[in-house]
Length: 181
Image (tube, rainbow, N blue to C red; front, side):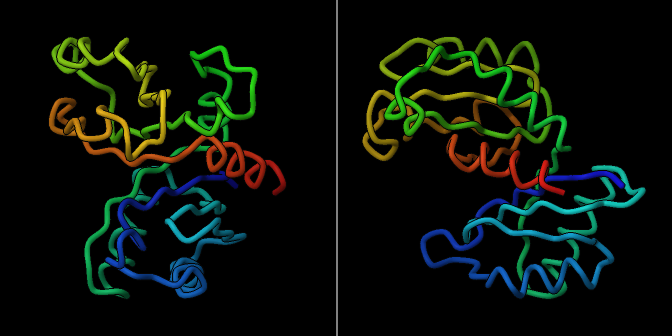
């Protein structure tokens, strides 16, 4: 069985698209997913996908959310191995725990074009730092995310792909949960 991490975009944020994690877990189990575990209230799920591939899992979850909760929410899927690679490929040399609190990963719906990467160039080494590796963008904020000038930049529009962001603590916890079985 394949272990997958499903990242649901935009639920339980700012009082919108409210979904109780137990209800989400029940819905996923009704779709045939096993060993479903959720982490915090922002749409982080570890599950066994059986023989299904990532695209089939994504489609099934998106349809299940629409049918069950009555709204659309995009889902980005990564395998356990891909999340391990995200951690291993962190391009920033961080040593202090405080530094990791300012590190975020944007999980992209697909790889960026050369044109999109060029449009991101001016943002790579400003006050905040960003790096794109494969289907992930790493952002190291110099301050609180909400106080950052980069936070206000329409990155998805610049990239041309949808994305969902998770802090480093969440990424690390999801990797541990997937490894636990």
